[in-house]
Image (spheres, rainbow, N blue to C red):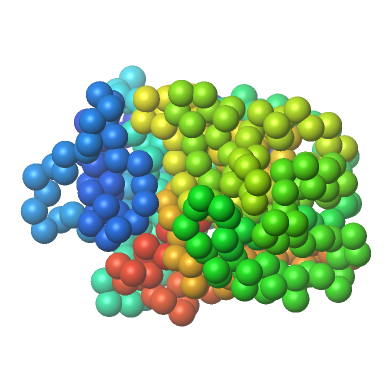
Amino acid sequence: MALISGIRDSMHIPLDFTYDEASNLTERLHHFLSSHNVQMREVDRAGGPVRPPNIGKQSGIHFVLKALWLRVVRPILDALAYSVSFSDSSHFILLILLLKSIPASDPARIWWCPTGPLAFLPLHAAGIYSRTGRSLLGSCISDFAISSYIPTVSSLIEKLKQPAGVKRSTSSKLLIISQPNTPGCSAIPETTNEMNCIWRTIGAANDGSLRLEGEIASLSRVKFEMESHGSIHLACHASQDLENPLKSGFYLHDGRLELADIMKQKFAIRELAFLSACQTSTGAEKLSEEAVHLAAGMLAAGYQSVVATMWSIKDQYGPVVAENFYRDLMVRGMASGKQGIDSSGAAHALHHAILGIRETLGDTEQGLLTWVPYVHFGY
């Protein structure tokens, strides 16, 4: 299904790209991340370790993103702009939905709903990137659209069915959780800096926002505060339980805040969840068709917009991305007459925050490892 400039119409776009090719790119990406000591699950469908394919010199992230651009994303963008002939030749489902963005100064929005091995690949970053610095304009998806992901097509369809006059909550209260030294987990000291950067950016203009760190951020306290804060920022470790996805969760000082507990909570408002934690959006290989991961779980719990990561992020850049993200939300809030963050602009804010990181780091291998893992889920 494609939705272009408010006109609903379905479109089948056949791709000269097979299931096996998608699986091969997934294995290449896993092998590359493993070789750079980046945490990401490495199990094949039989449950054993991934055996890297015979990939020779073409094993880098540049190769994977270029293949996604040439074989998947650019043909889709071309088809949305020009007429195409259709045939029933796809080997797996890839659904996208496109909307003209508001305001007009922002790029268009595109929602990806990948399945199978594509659920593990960064479609939002597909492109041809320079190995030495900045890439040519028009060579990657972010030059044309702001990407978001959805776990199911029905979730977006239901959202689009809402009457045009229905507005989201004006609540901008943010709950910031930082866990630099969680018992039983490795230290992540930059979470304190991340929390402080966010607080300096939004604190004065967000009456009612709250920050909790270390032992103060207990399970009982966090669950209590979530009831009165429409948005939450979690700078902590996270894990996914493949056998029981509802037991996936976030590590607080005295235990794990599980998805099951979040879903049981009766929150009056659920706006934005920023999951600044390891592996918050990577789905389980055995359950990839069900899009089981923490980001989708937070959407299922009622949050309208979720920022997550596909693999472990670089500690020193987490605070920079977060600060730029919330600064953009503040600007959008003021432009819309709100005193505080405007969570409805989360996808745009992440897009602009990543552009800022790209300006600093470029599109080198290390630059891509830093910004590509950030993804937006929701609306």
